[in-house]
Length: 201
Image 1 (cartoon, rainbow, N blue to C red):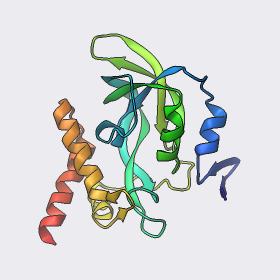
Image 2: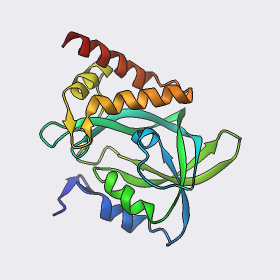
Image 3: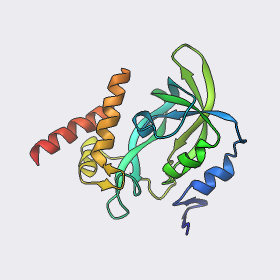
Image 4: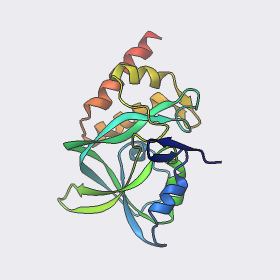
């Protein structure tokens, strides 16, 4: 059963699969660019035709989305990344060219509050393309919102879900960003706190 939650005049389902498939219908066999900025960077469990380093402008990565189905539970949600609008900021990630059929799998993976949105992405060679990105906006029930990096680290250290410990998500993302040569102060500061917290345990 899908439960809808009302936010003023807005309604956001706990499960966004149907909403994504209804609002972003993709023709069979169509090839689409998908921008990955979180676990899609390091946990690529879907087939793709091509991958390229890419970036989007006007967005920043933040650990403000709750995870009830992958890195936490309903009683003890973890934290995962979403994007927030920030003028002039650049978010670096990886773009994947995928066939339309792949979104059946991806919509399930990203069902906990994430919606497919259109995005313009830039590639390292100066070219660009329009594609899709999954973003969890503030009007979904799993959204946890802003907190200090230390508070986020504490919550991450105490959460685990079907996909594993929440801190594994953060550590793998930080490692991948470093390998890409990407500086992300928010991610690296949370990582620093997590290392310190785990030393004290």
